[in-house]
Length: 99
Image (cartoon, rainbow, N blue to C red; front, side, top):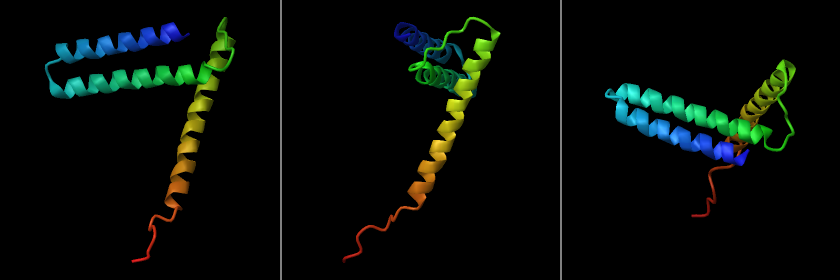
C-alpha cells in the first residue's frame, strides 16, 4: 500500500508540473492545480481511512462498504472540526490582565 501511495504522489506531482507548464491562462492553471490537490487530498484520505482496516474489494458490495466507510470517516472529520472550532471559540483568549 505504501508503494502505491508514493507512486500516486509522484504521478500527482508530475501532473502538476505538466499542467503548470502546459496551460497558458493563469486562471485555468489555478483551477487545474486545485483539482489535482483535491485529488491528492482524497487519495490521502483513502490511505488514512483504509490504512488500519483489512478492506478487500472483490465485488460490488465490498465497493459499497468501502465507499460507506470513507464517507463515514469524511463526515467524522467535519464533526471533529466543528468540535475543535467550538472549543476554540469558548476558550478565554484575553490572557493575563495583570498590567
